[in-house]
Image 1 (tube, rainbow, N blue to C red):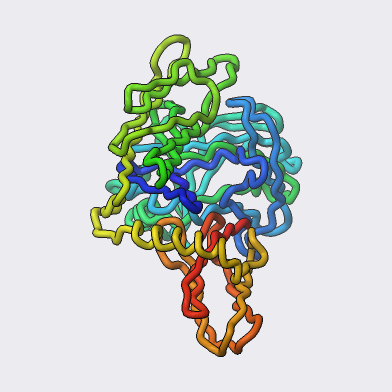
Image 2: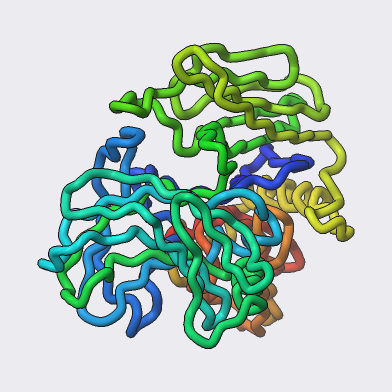
Length: 412
């Protein structure tokens, strides 16, 4: 997952040349659940909290409590089209059982993938009992062939009765969400922990990472912020901790890197390949690389499918100028900001006119538009943003014959 942020005087421009695999580590202290949410009623009766530490890597994890009815916990944003993007890799997850509702028999950790109303599940071979410890499971991202569902030494994919091999492959390749659940028995009192639900190589490498890149328009310098996803920094019996080194692609390197975040500055536009090397007990386990580029006057114009895309640079430059002008004029205000479900645009008009509002995401795409005929004086336009994901946006307002813009933060 590549996250991009937009600020005045500060553009995020990058040629993102490698797909970044999704990973939910639940480590954000403010929003540990990330984009995960209970499924809509009646399948969303689940209690959610967080705990620390996961003995496998020493990090924060998510706690799910079963309630009456279905107890699905779902991520409808990060794990789309898994088979199309990551065939041959694995879907990992860490699991711990605290309470089994008095079930009294071992439980097989399970994870689910859905597409529309169809669901497939990976059932681990390993079994757990209450407080027996953490286990790490990896499910192969693979297709059904010849009527045989994919499996591995760690478990087997299953599908609902009536589904065919073609149905399975449709769910795997065109996935719309990944789901987990504490609902393993008939008793609504189970408690389970999940952590590090990530797509990565099946070889056990943990050196997956997200790369946030930014470009400063005044100094022509770029900054890369590297965050390791699911690093094994804590040694446990039979599972020694890892150390990491980073090659930034410009001749600079960080050796014996054991923290989870690191930053590096680039002074010249160009293409750079950032590589993370993971070592364990003085032996190289694997190397993961990610290539990005930045330039002053353009960004990549091809998406992963090779389709032509309009460069958002011109729009972003116009937005930046408008935002600077707005900072001087201060005649348009947004409340609340950060916003959750709605935002109100307030402006003062010298005459009756049409006011247009456009909400733009960090890629330059317009995600919401609204126009209203307003009378003179202090007026407002209300935008419903309930369906937009959290992040940073630009609100462009056309009124009084001028175009102004401001940054809006959506926080769910």
